[in-house]
Image (cartoon, rainbow, N blue to C red; front, side, top):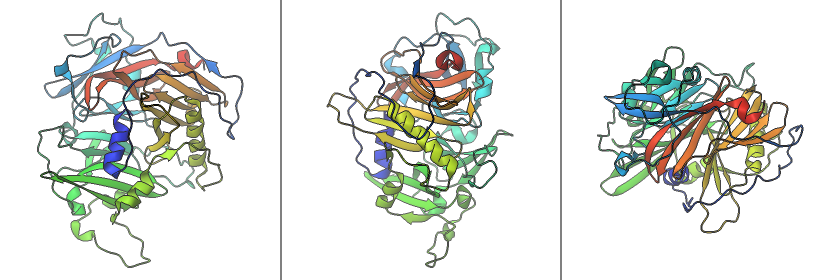
Length: 438
């Protein structure tokens, strides 16, 4: 995630998160906090990787291209910046099924990028189509061509299942249009939730705002799963008036084929199977980012989920940054989970952002990893030992975003940011072993 996370959370939940954007140097890594996870050996720090392969997104004639390029070094011209909702950029990852969600482009299998053959790095940005081994072309599906795509979601698998953390072969994606950043008409017939079949690469519409009785231009600005319940927030505007609506529902499938007449009150004691309105306070209470603490593995019947949350807190304790907004993903969770690490800070410190992934089973001999926006990688190996490395440094205004592992490669998104605008964007592909020593 990036500096937009706190502002989006504030808007959709009517919250009060705030921060300044001044930059500050990162202090040295802090000492590890003791948690009930076995460690082995001393903390190792590895040098930056020399196996980097850089790729940059471009868009022409309705198609999106990903081409080999040199490492980012120069800022983009002002006219090349676009609102982040309109930019072609890495929006989300599904590490378990190795999927990259590219805004305005669709889904890119991580294995496809990891298999691209190494080629000489261009000395300058390519002006003509690159060789097939150093470029990819994506044709955006109709559902994603005019809407922003944010987040992978899945129906939770019961913890009693023999395989509670395996991918189901289908993922859901949230779509929305922000009227502040686009001149495209807002169509109430457009879905806010779609399904992507991993096996067939087919997209299917799932849910519409009209079925919830919302205004024509209502947009789903947040969707999260916590404590066995789904929560969604919708924003609509009329003239200068902005309003929010919040809902809870038991499953994503309960939204499918939902008709407006199904939104009705249910007798007390009867299990609600369709979305029901909730207050803004109830939404905030359910969806406010967790603050750093050390939970115990016995607080829930979901054993895997508990252990994975312990790993997230262990990684958070390692990062010497505050405030830090973290988006974490486990294959046992139906959606990303948000965490917030806070401490006393001075007015000139900026908020930092990071993404964390839990690997179950371990991948590339890692059980968990966390990547900060400045490129610091913190990880826990499958034997319990910890490590810290750093990806290649980016120029000012450039940040790292989401990341995933595929085969021997770590794939990380990078982008050039200017508040709500984005300049050049792309992906970095580098070898995991050169970073982690595994």
